[in-house]
Structures are given as structure tokens and as C-alpha cells.
Length: 470
Image: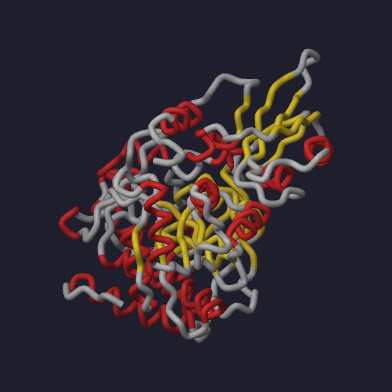
């Protein structure tokens, strides 16, 4: 693992890696974690008050040296709107200390700065490294697989982060972004074949779009490629969607990590297919998404994180906007940390027939009885009587079987409680490819009952700038 030579980073990193090794070995007692978390909490808050103009105002009057984990919940939240308003004033250290500069995508608002220093890079990547080792050992044994990383390579952290993780586990890595004008889907497929890549890290949509592109090139994804593992992130991937990827490629699909540019990697996957919180790096809370009322540290609610690494941009009581389930980390995989299940974004709730549905419930209803689908879109209208009507568009490259439309429509209608029709278009709306850049809802749901919101408009603009076969 790369270590910086600078003394200002090295003290933290040496302390951190000692803690991390004991944590991953199962040797770290609960009271030791609490001591680490409270010490780092006080350090982070004091740093933010001193170095960040935003937090100097936001946490005015807070005594950092007396903070406890219980007292943390008395501090105000930090929100996405705060980040967009504060911009560089959210930073607690000077940019001179950064080793990387990143930004959010900026598709739904101003792109916010996300620089990182060596403390943040090493602390975050250490947990992803353990994740890859856990999965690769389970699938490939002692062999280090070849990895393809498919994600944006501009001011985005994905390529750097996963390149570092690949080095940590001894894997060769190729950075291949199919939507790049330099690469494109044909070149991406060629590299997948020529390099005999074993593992692909991408979004669920890219995994299925690659399979679709392979078919159009006269290739069989299961026969003509060596891919055995898809590590997916960037958008919701329910078990039913993962099953479509597995069926297309004859591979095993894992929700590889959960996080964001702003928060770094909050949780990473294990060989059993579960996400584990990087507990040395965060204090995690659950709150009611509507009221902000505390719900404890287990169960279901909106995830709030406080970062324990005193880097350039530590966030304190940051409302992620994501609805998650937190449970005991006892899945037997060997990785520590509470298990995290991402339910969806808090604002991705959809009302159909008077009942509210979360994003995962919609996807489950659509794909639960479908095999070999390469994508989907849900269109919502009102009929002449004012009742909700759902049309599901499914991409089935082999075409539907006789009677399949009626059977699927009946199944989905029963799950959602509204009338439903199913269509099998030759090609889906290009907006379905934008999920990782904007939101699942903007990509998958076309709700014609209401005027387009800013996210839907952003997804439409983005879809117009990129072809399916860029």
C-alpha cells in the first residue's frame, strides 16, 4: 500500500493502519472503537471550526474538546444544499495539502469540490482493498484476476481509487470508459476480449449495455468473454437487476460499494454479497427522512454520517439523502462492520393508486418475474377516470414469448395495485442510461402525471449528449 513521506500525514496514517489491521482481524474491542471515534470526532470538529469558514459559523459555540458520541446528535446537520452554497468554504484544510482534486458531477446543480489528501485516500481505500481480497479469494482463489474499471476519468475519483485498490491486491487494471469518445462500446468490447478481463467494475446499466452491444456485434457475452465477476455501483441494483446481469454474462454480480464523491466509500462488499460499513471511518446514524428525528444506529432510516478522518473535507452529521437499513455485521464473511442495505434515495418515493412505494419495490415489481432483461422503463399516466396507469417497457433482446406481455402485466399490476401494460420496444429511451449521473428515478420513471422536475430535465439533457454506442 502506498504511504506518503510527509510527516504531517504519516502520524495519522500509521495510527490508522494499526487500528485498521486490528479491526479487520477482529481484535478491536468495542470500547477501543469508541475511544478512537470520540478522539477523532473531537479532532475533526476542532479542525473544521478552525479551518472551514462554513463550519466556523455552523458549529459556533460547540466545544470540540468535550464532545461525545452521544453529544454528536445535538449538532446541526450538514446538507447537500450546504455543500452547494458553501463550495470551497466547506474545506477544512488548504488545497495545497491535497493529492487529488475531484468534483461531483454537477448534473443537478453546481459541481461541488471534493479534494482529498493522503489521509482520506488511504483510510477509504483500505476498506475497499479488504472487500476485493474477500471476493477475489472466494471466486479466484490465489490468482489475482485482471480488472477492468469502467467509469468517468475526468475529475472523478473512481479510476484513481480503484487503480490503487487493484495495486493493493496485486491485480492488473485497465481503465475503460465506454462513453468516452476515445473508447466507445466497440473498443471496450475489444479490450474486454483481448485482455481476457476477469472482473469488471461499472454501473448496472453499463454491464447490461455492454451485453446488448456485444449481441449487436455478433458476440455472445457468456461464450466470447472471460468475465466472471461484475462489481457494480453508482445506481441502485436490486437482487432482481443483479440476476439480469448474471444471466446475460454467466457471471456473479456484487453491489461493490456504497458512497459518494462527498463522503468517500462508506461501505464495501463481501463475498456473501453484503455491504459492510467502514466503521473506523464513520459514525453512522439513522434519522426520519421527513422530520430528521433520530432513529438510532440500527434499523431503517435516512443515513447520516460523520467522517472520522481529519482530512481536507470532513463532513459532520451529513445527511446523505439515502434510505438504508443498518444491521449487525455477523454474516460470516470475515469482514467486520454493520451490514448496510441501500433501499434508495429518500426522495425517490412514488405514489401509485394511493400507496407509496420505494425505488427498490418498483424495481422488484418490474423485474421479479422477468429473465434476461437488458433494461426497463416505467411510464406512469392517468386514464380518463383519473386512475393511475403504468406501462412497463422491457428490453428483451430475444423478444417476448407468446402471452408474455399479458402475464407480466398481470403480475406487475398485482404487485403495485394499479392497472398495467407491458411493451417490448426495439430500443429503450436513452434516458435510461443516465441513472448513475442523475438518479434512478429520473432514468427509470417517466411520470407523465406531473411536470418534469429539475432532475428529469437534467437526465434528458444528458441523454441527448451521449449515444448508446458512443
